[in-house]
Length: 196
Image (cartoon, rainbow, N blue to C red; front, side, top):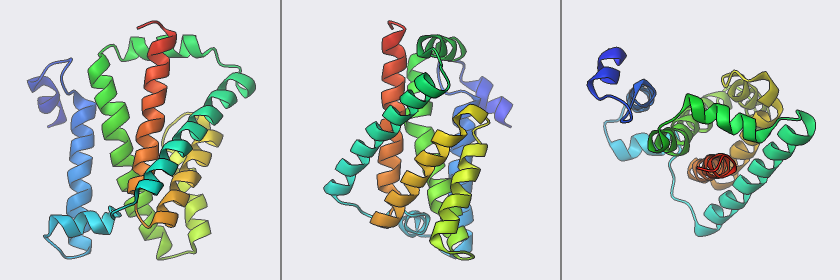
C-alpha cells in the first residue's frame, strides 16, 4: 500500500516517508480514540497531550531548542570530532529535495515523535511506574529508535528535556515547539555551511 502511495505522487512531492508518518499519525489517533472510548477529535488530541499552553512556555521551549542544538554541536565537534560540513553534504546528497526535507524533518517528524513518545508512550509508562523512571526509560527508547549509536547521549538528553517540558506544562505542545525549532536550526545550519 505504501508503495502505491509513494509512486502515485512522484518526487519532489511527498514520498514514502511522508505517508508512513501520515499513517502513523492516524493510527495514533484511532488507537487513542479506542483506548479512551471517544469519537471527539478534540478529546483524542487532549488525551494524547495537546493541552493549551502559555506564551512563556513557548518562549522557554525556543530557548531550550537552542540549548539542545548547541549541546549537540559541541558534542559532535569536541567529543566525536565530526566534520559538520562533511556531515551536512552527506545529508544533502541523501535528501536532495529541499522543501520535502524541510516538511518531513522540521514539521512532520517532531509532531509525530512527540505525540508518540512524550504523548502516548509517556502516559502509558506513567501508569506503571513513577515519572522519573518513565522519563529515563522513555528517553533510552527514544535514543535507540534513532539507530545512531554515536548520538545516543545527546538524544537521551534531548528526550529528558522534552519530558521535563511535558511534565512542567502538562502538555506536549512545548516539547513539539522545542523539537521543531531544534530541527529547524539544524536544517538552516546544514544548508548554510554547504552554501545552499
